[in-house]
Length: 492
Image 1 (cartoon, helix red, strand yellow):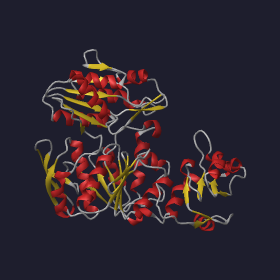
Image 2 (cartoon, helix red, strand yellow):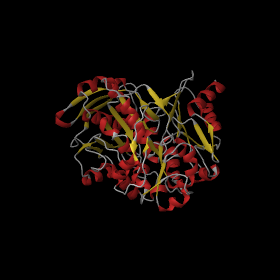
Image 3 (cartoon, helix red, strand yellow):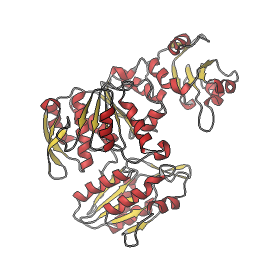
Image 4 (cartoon, one colour):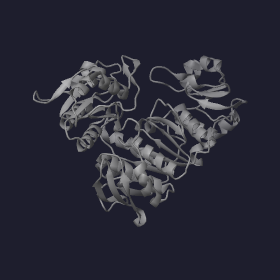
């Protein structure tokens, strides 16, 4: 995704920006580190990868129309004369910032908001996007479920896109006169320097619980990665949920102005003064900074969604929304795709799909499901392959504890053996536990539906909005929502 209006900058200007001697004349009309995205006139930024150096693709880049390559010393030899070379010490260090500079700092043209945390990012972003829409802003959104510009939606591979692509997306939003932008910021993106050149007017911290330890190594390192967002390099202001120990710790060390947020702690800048269950939702009274009082009804279930809504409200006020109008608009908010999303095909029981893929998220979602279920909670869950294996038994324990019938299955096994993943998930379970192991996800969903009776709730966890299942390196079409409908029709 790029702006339709092309601009050009000279290689001399680029050298001046980088503070290096000018080596070549000429101009370029874009920048990318992915050869698949190269357009004629582009600067190709060749990065060192885990398996090979991007400079080995210099001839392909030239064939696609690249006018020069920016790379490091190791990459220079691989270019082998295919393109003029701009040499820098660390291309990864400067790639995102080059794109931000090239597009004239597009995030600065919008009221931009960054959201990070283990869980809740997608829902908070979606709720904030809706609040902006309801008060006649023109919003944009970048995150797990895709890129949204006004009424148009586009897919994305990552929660936070690569740095050069991220800046092009923001520049496209700027061209489309987007006034407010919210994006999910992953810990991976912060560590991998995809966020360089991006700056927010305010950033939100939702929570932190076990996830991605295969990448970060420890919860401390994971926390430090998230904390990087809350510095003057990336944000002017912060809103921090202090209900977790990690959030409380962040509030003691953050170096930008901030407001605290808590579901029950009345000393927090943002908190609930009353919460009352009403139908499939809550009647709420929210207290905010300066004595703000926002009253309304939220049609989302679960304590975790109360946290998500409170964060969205606080971010909305910080970005200029009318608090009284927010109270009026709360009742019209809907959940993000694949987050406690209802599936209806005429069945006498409730069927839901949710993206929960951490121990904390599984626990929260099943607690919310229990609130609305008069019969049994029947839950299906798998764990992704090539990801943090240490959370698998914890997710299995949360599944058994939160459901009446726990069905263990596959998620995206990727390159791992599904049977091995399942063995790790059920580790420590007792023979008396009410559980079923069915490796085939379609079969597991069918088992859940075949067991369900009136008053029960079937909830399929782990994949949410996803429309594919990756097995042995191949991604097959698979959508939990469609599979639920298929199974309901089969057993009706």
